[in-house]
Image 1: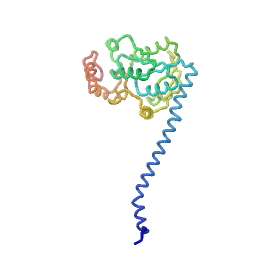
Image 2: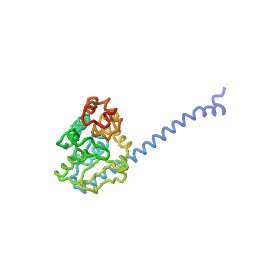
Image 3: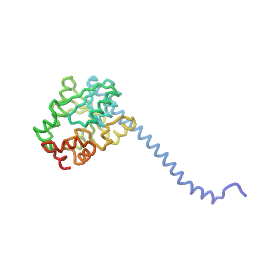
Image 4: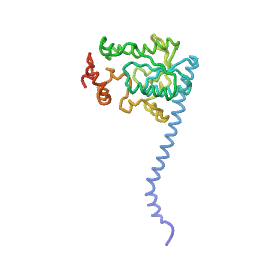
Length: 267
């Protein structure tokens, strides 16, 4: 008998192997595209962020701190900034209504990474102010300035800083679409903001975190997308449904607090 395949057998064998060859081609194609995307991400987004910090250091003679919130965006910026300047000053503003996980996370990160950390906060307890002013609303966010902006601003001024590095991106809201790498505020107080990842999106932030194996705030694993003030009335009902599940003691505190919380009292 002949030891070679007939033309018909060769044709059948090709038909059987064709899907396998196609899958192998697709795998190689996907790998090549992924490598290309990774190179472009590094060459453009990461190097751009470093370049923005380097240029800001030239303008401000390296006398520029970073505002760290404990969130994913400022984590990425902190990691990049420390590669440019390992001695950078880090400012964490404690609103006095931070999640306990965030406070612990910031403390551990400071110990592990060894950066110079300064914590600022308002001297008046937040809930005392709520009793006097009521809960904030979309139209009247009275708490942002005294509990988020003012303490950090006073520290910046006292130390002679003219600018700070932030983790702000222009994809966060429609009001930040015009965000630039270095932003001079139109109103006083005039602390200039340097925004290294101004042009990143959420997917790119998480990609950087995962590729560099950065330890991120455990609240994200609990399903929280924003890790700011745990009792902020601007958060939607979903936030308080989750709070009831993950932090029942904090949730019960809100339900028994006077004045009544506009959302927690209805969940």
